[in-house]
Image 1 (tube, rainbow, N blue to C red):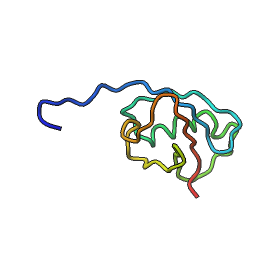
Image 2 (cartoon, rainbow, N blue to C red):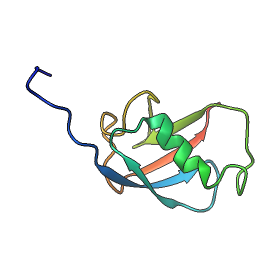
Image 3 (cartoon, rainbow, N blue to C red):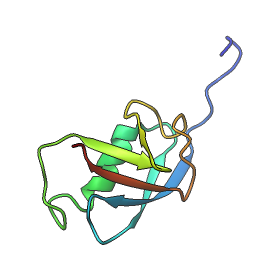
Image 4 (spheres, rainbow, N blue to C red):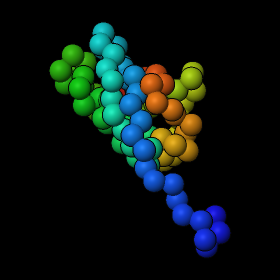
Length: 91
């Protein structure tokens, strides 16, 4: 990025998300500038400790059959509106 360019404005990215072995997929709103780690917590919030037993493990995010690095932003990871993500506990 040069000195004259500015970062794009964050955009709303509604995602289809499911956590671990939950039976319910949810529509989760995230922002394009949020990290994948933040996305994981938003998806887990609705299931963890409710329909899915809470575990003391790190989480991992799968998008298009690949593990997404947690430090990337949603935009950097190439996650687009209405894409499907699965969040699970790391083995």
